[in-house]
Length: 103
Image 1: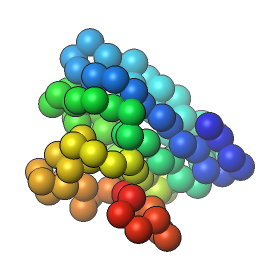
Image 2: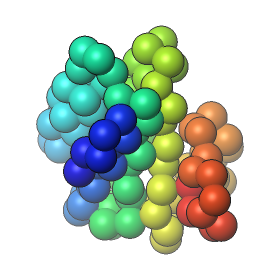
Image 3: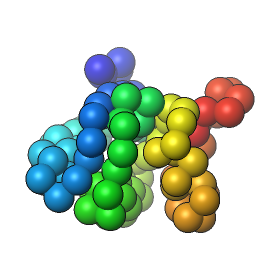
Image 4: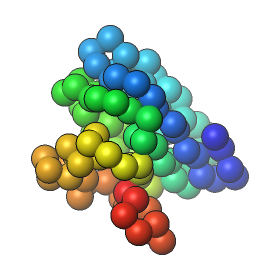
């Protein structure tokens, strides 16, 4: 979903070595638009599990976003977002302002 300069990407299901290339391509297409979006939020609420390749894809997308001056957020709830928090990775991503408990 795109709203002016902000984009929300809803991910669903299991993100693994087979699906992470599609996620990477989808995020890169958004992040490399010209002009770039102001911010990109990745909604993980529909993700049931994520493997290392999926985490690496999101971290790689964060780097691309930072290089282009784009705010990159993770949002949602549940075990997948808790995994990012437990691993100390959630702090790397911009937090959504005004959404208590949603990153």
